Length: 167
Image (cartoon, rainbow, N blue to C red; front, side, top):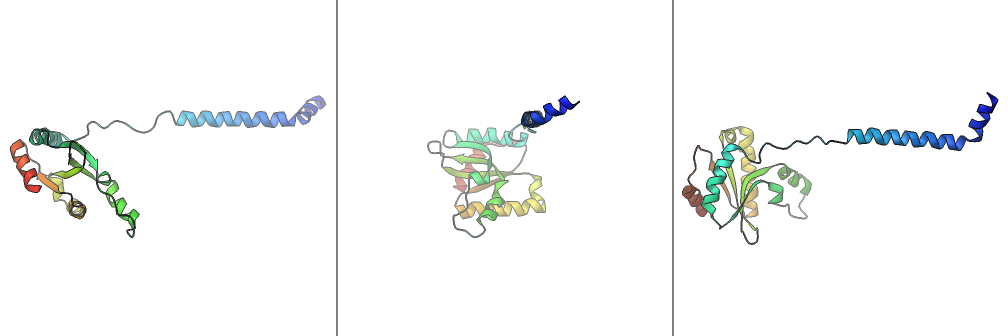
């Protein structure tokens, strides 16, 4: 027994080092097991079926005049001016909001117009408030925002007329 204590005491730096290495390896293993898969799954689709139906008519309506982008975050379209009081607060108001479609110049990808499809949900009080804010934000930035009511069928010619009138 005395020999055992002599070995422990005589080689204590080795034993402490061994315990530390084993503890670190166990922690790394636990961390890597927990991090193998992040909690993300794919969306079923980028747009709703109604938005897809509109997109197909919109695609025919714009021909090659504009490039169409779907589900664009407003913060990627608008930015908050530097030096504005409560700049972070204004940015937070647009970070999680999206526009259904954006038309851009095909050569420069300069933003030409935003398009929102308005279904029945846009009649709710919270959506009305959101829509009024988005309308004001686009107007302040000088970007036209076209609102199109949803319907079972869209005619490309009618969509083109709406776009031309808005521009």
